Structures are given as structure tokens and as C-alpha cells.
Image (cartoon, rainbow over all chains, first blue to last red):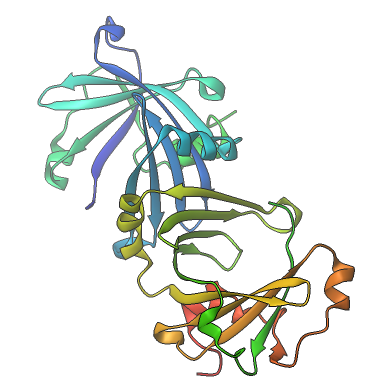
Length: 156
Length: 156
């Protein structure tokens, strides 16, 4: 799956008429999530279900995704209890980029983050965040979905 | 899935006409196998495919199994390279019990083990192994399938 070059920010305020942007509901839960980066995640997004496996570290890191049937998802989902994230994801144009803006609900209600993906490190460095972006949290592990699922909102 | 009460033995010699007993080919591989007992295994048995997840430790240990489609299996299997076991499993009547006799192939060719499952600890203690059973290896972790997959035949 290659290396993703992304920057992640909190949200100072939402774009006007946020619900007019394309959006979809995502819920995901972790069956396995170790401190060494091994991960088994199930996700339901726009009615489709997936399983993602992350193994290894550094350069040997591998990510595998397979489609799950609804039945398979329904069988695995109860076992993610206590380690879940639920959110609405909006696609928002920011200059030449399509940012993904996540509004969390459930235990994480109120948390909003926006992520932009780049084709190169250089492009990521040249990116000028628009006025409505908040503090950058790219390197802050407390804002990783897995961390949020396990530990809740940072600072609470 | 409850607690399994099993005893496992090496095989001194095979029962006569072993191929006349019901048998099936099993291949299984591990995508995740940590020292703390977390495990993600895929298995193909008699043409059917499964995924088994083992999580937690001790009394909170959970085992979940879901059916996989052949496509899903085919997608995951290549990622088990280097951590696989392949064997033929025979069902052999031993007194009132149906023992499972595994003859391994591939890197583990020559290894044979037989396992008997009991309904109680008492029954397992009263079990008298037949003459063709070899040394008991119930408690020897080197004979666990996961260990064999990772490390090969004990003593080699």
C-alpha cells in the first residue's frame, strides 16, 4: 500500500454549510491493537465492511485489507467493545486537495480533525493550511484513531 | 468456545492401514502470532476456509472464528509465508474417543502427533494411551502448531 504522506490538524471552525459536502458514516473497532503496531481493525463505511491487518514495523510494515460480508462484520464487531471509533467523514476541497474532515461521535463527540494527503514530502511542506484549520497534530499519537478508540479524547 | 481439555502425544508407530481412516488435508498460516498469545490464523480444511482470532490471556482469553471465502483466503494466505503448517489429519477411534492424528508435511515432514479431547479433567487423567502412542507432549510448547510454524521441527 506504500507510504502515506499526510498532515493532520484540529479544526478551529467548520466550513459553512458543512452538511452540503459529500459525507459518509464510518465506524471502526479494533480486535487487536498492540503497542508494537500490530493491528486488526474492522470498519463499516457507507454500508461496506472491511478488515484491515497491520503487521511489522518500519520498512517491513505491511497493511492488508479485505472486504467483509455484513455477516462477518456482525460476528466480529461485538468483540471490539471498548475500542471503537465512530465518525462522519466529509470530503472538503482545500485548494487543489480534497481534505477529509472527521467529526467524531459517541464518547468522542465534539472532536473534529481534518487530514490532507500529499503525493510528496515537498508538497506536504509547501501546504498552507486555510484559516479554519486548527493546531497541527500530525505527530501527536493521542490523535491516532487507535489511540482515541482505546483512551478517549486527549485531555479528558 | 470454552476451555478445551486435551492431551497430545507423539506417535510411536502409525495404526495399520492409516489411509483407510477418514482424513482431510489442513493447511494453516499465521498472520499475527505474538509471544503474548495474540494470534490471527487462516486455515483451509477440506476445501473450507476459516479465520481464527485469539485475544487476551488467561480467563479473559477469547477465540473467534469466521468463515472465509476462497477469495478472502487467497488474499491473506501469501502473507503467512514463513509461518505455516500443512498436515493430513486422520480420525482414529481409540477406545471411546476419536483421536486426531496429524501427519505433517512440507518443512515438518516426518512429524506425527495425536491428540485426544476429553469432557473433564478427570477423564483426561484416567485415559490410558494405547501402545502406538509415543511420548506425551501436552505441556511442551515446541509442539504447538504456532511454534512449529515459526520454528520448525523441535531439535532440528
